[in-house]
View 1 (tube, rainbow over the protein chains, first blue to last red):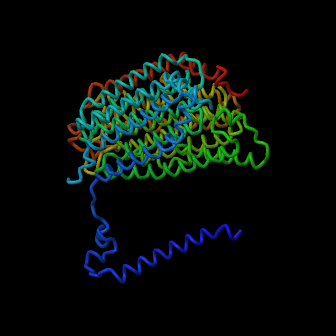
View 2 (cartoon, rainbow over the protein chains, first blue to last red; view 1 turned 45 degrees about the vertical axis):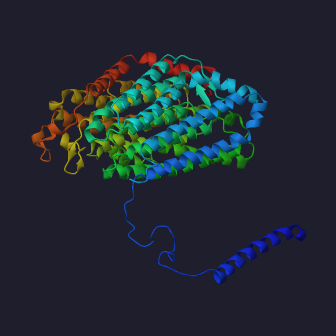
View 3 (cartoon, each protein chain N blue to C red; view 1 turned 90 degrees about the vertical axis):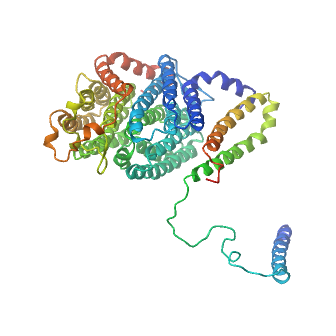
Length: 124
Length: 499
């Protein structure tokens, strides 16, 4: 019973040991030249201190749309691809390709709309 | 499932999804057109064409035999064609009425019309569902589009407020709905409506699970059709939403949701054990809707409470649980769609930017019928029909939902319904009185420049109102053919109700 878990404990020990070793090595060997930017809570992120009522570009919704397009695409294509062979074997291969093409076409319209509305134009 | 026949079945069943495909694909085309030519004026007319073609298609299929398609997830046939016809024509009227209104507000976005199309697709799916998953999918497609349509006038605080309320409460009710479906699935092991009726509910715990789930499911539905006590969102949302779209929300949504409810009652729970609970909700809805409407000064709020009351009348027909009751409810949904889309259509042309946002109060419209006689007279017909005044459609509609309830032994329910209907005459006639018999001098608050501030009505929009008014007279006189058609849906074996 206990023996079954030995590899697991080994794995935990290895992971902890590796992480601690690397952290310790970095602290001792690495050069330390802190600057204001580097010590921020989110390095190379946004400034966490400021007004909570800031305006942000409504273009946010276009970015969210792109995310949805690609996210949903993968979520549905994965099981489709996984069961594709069984469809081909039963002779419905072309059919499922047609169904997925329709689905991709609908997503493509969304992507087209998004791009034309400037969803990928971050300069504005 | 045998996979080799799956694809041929999909192809042969495609005609059953004609309206859904045409409306959906044209909606996509509208989005693409909007992406390339921002807010092109042809976009609404594309929608009108698609909805018109689909409505013509459905009209020729009113006598089609009833059956299931797409692996028993959707239904097809006369019942579905009838509901689709209501939904498509309402969508058509909504677009025609929205064009001048949104032009006036400078919010004539192409996306608005595309969203109307997508929400119509959801409604069609909801009204032809034969499976809990189809119901949920249709309901959500419809609702998500409506949340956006409620609040797309971003600068109007009232609209944004109502959109947020609608979204939060709608999402909450969806939770109830989904939980109900899950429990019913747990009890029966199936999502298909007819299979639910056939499932054995042996032990007490299984029965509790099923009926508890069904109760939650009904709560979700009652929210969508704004039946009391789940109606709280209605006045706020109807007031804040752009007026032609409020008309769409109050008619097409209800037609689709009630159609799905009828399908569930007929196929999944044909025993009629729910009769008293639906009757109780009908009483509450009629009383709250009518009594609250008495106190309203804002016309859109008044119409919102009136639409709550009318959901109650339809529920009276449903609680009869007989073929005649369901057929009457279908007829009522048609009449209600015509008169309510008309009433909101008139209001959309009598609205302007006053000092405190868009003016919609009754007192600001004193004597308006003298300046706008067409709007005044059509509004008069809509109001009289909403009361249920013979020989208009509203009278025939009320008769055909009340009579089956009496036959089913629910006389007390009908007595309350008739009393409430009499009460409603007060606030409907007040609108007619203010429109025709008061003059602007009677009311101090009236804005002297209002005549110039109204949106210019297009011929198409005014024509829509006139067609609605004429249709009400026709439905009120020649109701026999329509009622026979709706009765026919429930006589075929596929939709036969339990004795």
